[in-house]
Structures are given as C-alpha cells and as structure tokens.
Image 1 (cartoon, rainbow, N blue to C red):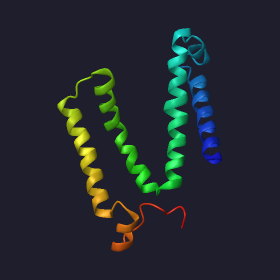
Image 2: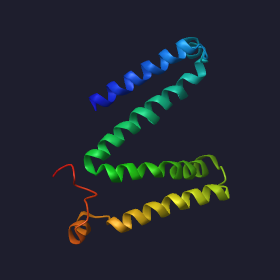
Image 3: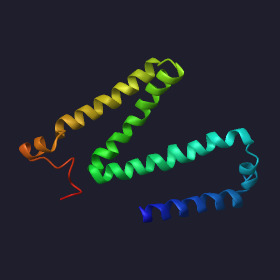
Image 4: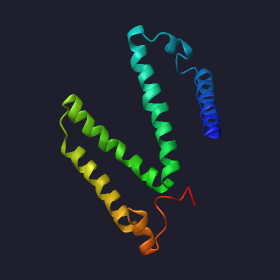
Amino acid sequence: PVVTAWCYCFGTCCIVALNVVSGSGEGLGALLAVPRHLWLPLSYSVGVCTVFNYNVLLWANSMLSATVVALSTCLQPVFTCMLALVLDGEPLSPLHVLGCGAVAGGLHIFLSDRGLSCATQEKHQKPPLCGSKAE
C-alpha cells in the first residue's frame, strides 16, 4: 500500500507539472475558483469514490485472489446502471441492458469454468480463486 500511495503521489505531481508546463489549463486557479457549494460534492468524490474504494480493493485483495478482485471491477458499470435506475429513476436503454448482460455473462462463464468455492477448486484441481494470500 505504501508503494502504491507513493506511485499515486508521483503521478499526481506529473499531471500537475504537465498542466502547468503545457499552459492548456488554468492550473491551480481553476481549483481555487470552485464555488463554495461544490466543495462538499468534490470532497465526497475524492473521499468516497477514490479513497474508500481503493481501501475496499486492498481489503478484497487480502481476502481473495487478484484475479477475482480484478474481475469484480467489471461490475462497476453494472452497479452504476442499477444505482442510477433505483436512486435517480434513470431508465435503462437497450444498450445498458446489453452491456450489463455481456458483463454478467462473461463473469458467469469465467467463474463457472474455474469454480466459485475453494472446495470446488480442490476437488477439480484448478488454480485457486480464494485463499491464495494465506498459503
């Protein structure tokens, strides 16, 4: 986690430096010009959508294999569609339904081929999906 944090810090510095050197953006002035009423949504976006989710991924990696955790990130657009439907009443278009179905189908094919539980994996001698960190 410490190495990853330093990589994010380095990447942020590079992005800021590129913005300043290129002169294409307003730089720090744009951040300081954010209206007062938008700081709470911005803080939520940084705190929950970035920091919280990153920590959840770290926790999941400690409990499951990296393969399962990486595959679960494919569900983010699916959950986004479902939350938009439930919380905002945004209707699902046929492309949304097709995309959600493609993601769910792909995950189902992968997981049904590899087995979902550790007991199934031991029985069929397949590469581990869970418990790989503790071994």
